[in-house]
Length: 125
Image 1: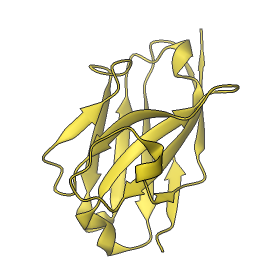
Image 2: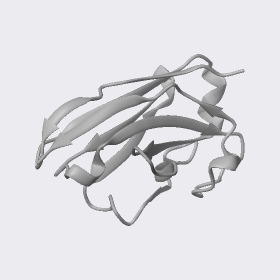
Image 3: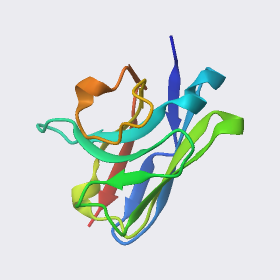
């Protein structure tokens, strides 16, 4: 079992930045893909970004490409999401997730085995 705890959410004005972090309970996550998803009120959970175990490959949703950057620090069992140029449409609860499919970079939520509780990001326009 892997516990994931997100932090860094909050209220920010449009055009601003936030950095989300996710701490994992086990060092074993260093061999797994990690990702961020988000869910806005009344909408389905959607993929934001993913990163492979070594950090060598990443993938992003088109809506955040060029604005968000995912990174990881396996020594600290952490993954981060740097969010710049935030827009009102980025308002959502952001979730950290782990996939035991080591090289998986896809957007299918069912391929992710462990999830955090989420952190709220609110962007005011």
